[in-house]
Length: 231
Image 1 (tube, rainbow, N blue to C red):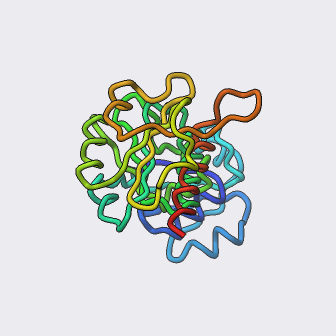
Image 2 (cartoon, rainbow, N blue to C red):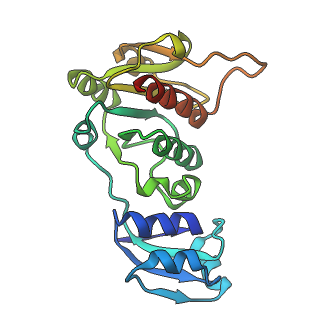
Image 3 (cartoon, rainbow, N blue to C red):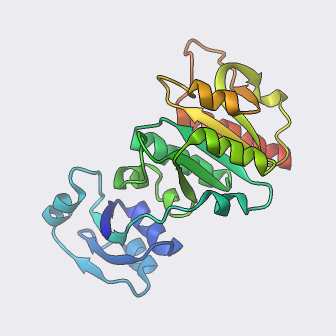
């Protein structure tokens, strides 16, 4: 089964990572960066109209690629990394938000991202584009039940914190060790049963007029603080 991704950076990162097979690249621009990253992958010169058709309204920059289905990881693969740093998303349905979280996770060197199997955004072409290709480097696992997933993380000696207004200021927590942050959608936040399964709650103080941060921004702040504390 194959799918289409679009945009210069997503296509280049898919070619570089080799985590999934790139079947062919269709290019209306003659991008030197795409050709340099292609290796042995066929790059076909096509019309802009053909790229428009394949991207189906996505902002493609004149480049699309036909690739194998996204290679989701297992939770145990993510846990196998020494001192894992994990982002868990609860009910994030916008693929652009997921993509932005994946970009933040890659930047902070996170071990992986966990998303629900149902009623949540998956790693679609829109998420890949929003991640600027970071999706091709970050491990993403699907969880059938997030409450059980939190329990498994704790069994693996990972401290799990739910991001929630009123939680402990992130700068006051000891995050120097295996840690996971659970972040919910901007509308509903982390579900009660999932939150209660966590070791505690964490918050990014809001000093202005807005009441909350976008989920990807909160993910970046928390992940980078955990990384900073590790030195």
